Image (cartoon, rainbow, N blue to C red; front, side, top):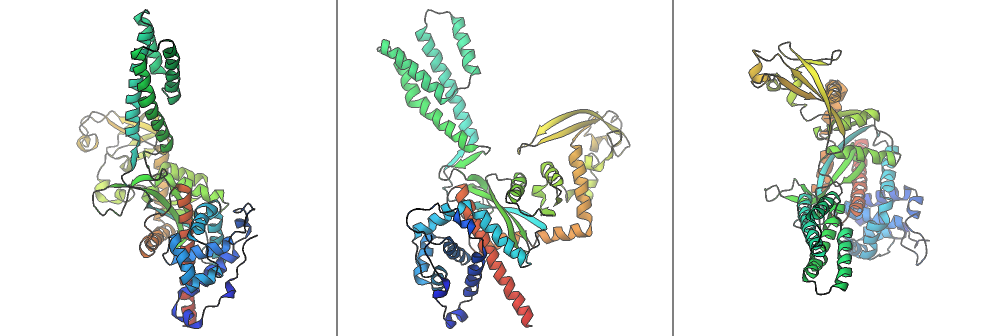
Length: 519
């Protein structure tokens, strides 16, 4: 059982209700959280020990604090003793800052998406969102990590390779000491064997163990003692460190020592104007009518690889599948188009050269494959001079996101004395193009969708959907840097920010509707 509380046991005086408009928001938060299914919170407390504070009360306090730009657990605890609205929400209970921090960083992390989507369902019931059009975009939020505690994959691999070479030299030296009477060919066989088998910390530890056994029989052997000391004191600790770093990297190229989940990214807030990389997270949100209807945190800096994991989260929590996804050209990849097509979602997503191909300067570049005609029946491309580029061979190219794209190479052998040879073939005897036919087909479909009246209307709306939400959170709410560390904790923190934003937007929308009704 939880500690009992009642928001009605403390009444807001009328003068406070008039002077402080935030009491309307507090009442909305109180009402919305009470409508969330209480079974969501039951899994947060296994039972035993003293009765905990009621999770709904804790959630109300944190959401209200976030809505008035208070993110510190110490400041929230202080407000519970001084601010009458906080007292009303908590039923005059006063959990300390450790309890507040433990609740949001540990208790809420398992149910943050259920809590968030419960509020989204309330918005849907009120008719504020239809959950049909999904406007997607991302931004970088700085992590709570030192910007100089970086670890780079290339440096780790470079030093690890040098360590392996040094280990091979030491082992070859040991073999030469231990087997002086053997032929040099055997040493060569050992060197080839070392190069074939990967060098691990376990292998170095086994070598140290063998040296210890040998030194028990021959304790005065100085070369062996020196080799053991090098392996034990230098190579083994460094090898273990490099292995830990490689495990931490995963698919990333960098991470921070103070927050291992944070990746170094280029931020928009670049006060030094030098393009310095900072540890952070790529935050993705989906909006409708400037309400956040989906969110996710990613460790990769690029947006193209975030779309599919983001949409998979909606499927994981059994959310209604959007009819269309609207996003900028940063998401326009063959992999994303294919995923949307298989999921039967209309992709209103520009590709990276969408606006360029509409320009006169681009259309004059006759050597580009976009300005050629494709003969689908013969699988050939026809250039501006009516010559045909014949298929040569097919190859597969793997992208950074792990997607296998099929590239087909076409070649024209009639470029000699062609009037367009200078601009098209760049004075070469043959013109060669490498094309993903599937991607060209997808781009054609995207152009057709965005050229319709409905497609143009939705894509224009994108400009007033996601960016104002990020502006509200980062500028008006002053949330530009995470206070917690770790992917799971910051996902919870951002989820609470999204819930607070939706409730604030709900309140402001209700005020506008009330003013319209009065008029």
